[in-house]
Image (cartoon, rainbow, N blue to C red):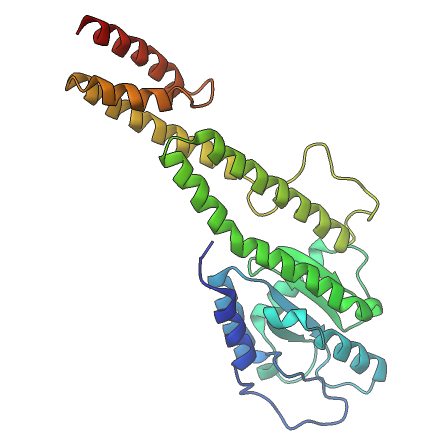
Amino acid sequence: MTRRTLSFLTTFALGLTLALALPAAAGTIEHKGWLYGEEADKAIELAAEHNMPVAVMRTYRDTTCPKCIGAARQMAASKSTKKMVRVMAYVNGSADLKSEAASRLVNKAYSQTKDKSNWVPDLYFVMPDGRVLGFVPYEDSAKTEPEAKAVAQMAAWIKGVDEVLDKADRDAEKGRYAAALKDIDELLVQDAKINHMIRIQTGVIDKKEKMPETPASLFFPNLKDEKVAEYQALAMEQVGKARKLIEKEELREAQRLLRTLSRTPQGWEANTKAQAMMQEVVELLKAS
């Protein structure tokens, strides 16, 4: 996950000119800040680079239906979508108006969304890899703003994850493995809560359904295993350093390092080795 700022991405999405725009006509669905065609493809590429959400409106380009136009206007008017890349997936109009990337995102999102509408426009909030964060069907266009606001909060959480991981890594480097793993556990709890909320918002489960006893992670399904393995390897490196200190007869330094390593979680190889080496150092200090 990149550390680049949301503001850069937002500036791009809002400031990008609609190079393919046509003169406005009655029944034409276009909105300021929403991209289509080649510009939408480029914007989605940038969203992928920054790992930020995309709002995709699937709609007609030209229509005589006043309800369709009205729903599209409600969806486009959301203030919270301005913090995302906003693209159109037109279902009619000339080929140069259509975005292949937006269409791919809609197809991925459609397969993950229950209780889909048979009408357009509809609005999908999607990560660039196709993970759905939210959905607004045609019939619920008035609910666009609260849905978009919830997705914007998810995006803010995603943005802050790197800081949590950096802190955990710094703690581990200082031997504070328990604190590091606690941060990881708390992050995964938040991840599971967000996943549960998304499942409700996309109609996969009923809004009254409670969190499962074994929460499911959406963004970081393998994070705990990866971090445990990483921190175990780091601890074993420290064990190696302690052995070298003992060989150099720098016993007090070795003792301080081993005291820290003895606080690694039970069951880690580093923990077992550190405790045995600590006893060795104690004996050597007594004999000196």
